[in-house]
Image (cartoon, rainbow, N blue to C red; front, side):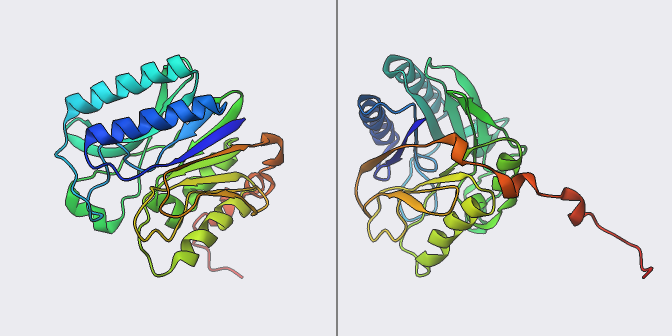
Length: 259
């Protein structure tokens, strides 16, 4: 499967975010990608990270999603579109999976919210999904989940995912090695591909990166650059050996005191 990882600039407006998506999907299609993934909350942008983000507009979000669905069908390219979405008066960060024919296959909510995001009204979702494009199964974990909640990645690997897509936002951080090593850990501890997709940001320390099932860096975007990373992954190489050996009974709480 040929994947595209779109390191786009942060959206100045929701309309700008939609245009970034359109431009990158067109490039991904021209370069033969089966699927392209964007950063966290590409439309309208992520709140609380130092940029002005427009008030939530559900009608705009619905219209933008429909336009991206039509684009996926026209360009014959599947899309992972991370957006804000309000449901039952709760504002979620989600990633919508759109097939090559423009059908919504489902979406993954961000279930572990960063403590710094609580003040912006984001509500954690619940449940995890596995998706499939071109016969390749994959999971999605969103930013904070992939860095600090490895069980989110383990779930996908245990349930047959060969690649984990990780839409994220990471700006100017002092400990960039933590993020780079976390990508390798998520890959190696499950023997899957790990595809982390960041924005192109000023003073960016963590780039969009693809890690192999053996922990090798296969591709990395230039920092601060609007760039599409394209790579052919081989799902057979994602053996998931360590993930499939996971014994959930070993973490069962025991109360016995007998020796």
